[in-house]
Length: 577
Image 1 (cartoon, one colour):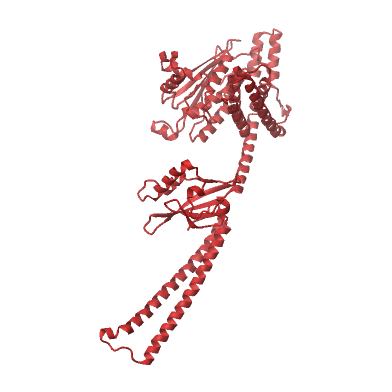
Image 2 (cartoon, rainbow, N blue to C red):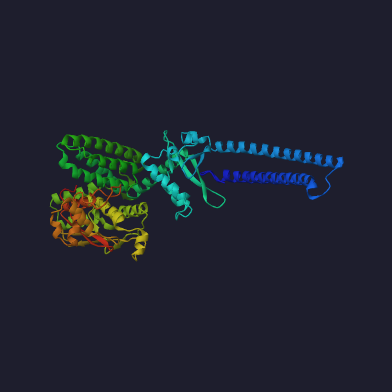
């Protein structure tokens, strides 16, 4: 028997009791049929015996009484058997009609098809609604609206199923069958396939069950949105300052991208900004906002944008979409995080701009640099490890999305206090390092174990201050290391050969050539995803490092891992306000 999918346990239990009763009744009627056959056989044998007496030299039945007894007994037996079979026939007919009513009342589409892919003449009425056709004697490819160019492959998979000696199981093969029906009214119709086996165990037919799960899917999506909203709120409260900084950077982008004189020459910088902002807003589970950013980035990469006028027009549309998304987010969370700073116990929240503004005021009034340095280190600076909360969370989430495993970040060395506002853009760009580590660096658990590694990848971060305590000479060094695949120099060279066959890279060793990953639009990925593949991430990291007057260097060993060594000044810039 076939169980309809997605029915609640209570209903299933009720149907289970009804099914047992139906089976018991069916067995009883089968017994009646067997009894009828036995009785008919006895009558036939008796009559044949009477007819066969003379054949074997015996005296035939000559007594009228004996003849009439045999005749009456035969007629009574036949009449009784007819009545029994008539009752069985009536009951079976009623059960068949009841079964048809029950099947149609489930609201599911039932049909079956054979090896040639042709549907049988038996189907439920729900097929007319769910599959939008009468499936009888039609090709299953036609019923399921399989594209013409894919029908041959689909039929091949059907042939594989019906081969008695194929290596794949039924459940393995049906994964390549359509799992959803493309309904004209956008209803979510799921498809489930069940086998029917013949007496010798061979596959005889395949039953298709179509179920309308539109309401269930909508309910699950609504629950998922509620869950995402709750997660978003938790993240915002956990990293409130980071969230406010992120929203401020979105507003800065909207204002700077609105100024006059922009053209195609500004496209790389704007695309880098959008790419980075997309990653940072997703850290707070702002999924819809992130998708808007992703669409905006794709729109600005359209090959049809060939003039400044077209670019500015498309940028204006993009800015409007991002602005609308920002307004929705602001409205959504303003009632939760507030729009003003407020007292919390005996701790007052002071704006970062005020903290750094006071430092600039002291410098403008020629306050002793040592005093300014003490102020910055005690008031403005924060532990560097606090800046990697979002990095670690994103690392863990991306690993889950890609079915990989990562351990908690291992911090090595001290936890120096640093000025975060001057390096805020750099910290934002670290999301690209995080994504490259998970997508390209950390291998799947199976691959790691095959290479003798722990199933979970390890990311190590080492932070230190160089020339510590020396005003305007202090340097922050950050080394981010993973124990994954490493960077394959041969793949880097292959990519360079396709874009710059005569370049100087031909004379560089492996460690020198992998520095080319920081080139604009450089990527070894075959496809573009929402995680990586555009070739902007590493370029964005290098751009932020150079803007601070620092250096970035990548070191890698194939199948051992990679390290990003970044050094930037740890001082108050004149631009930091």
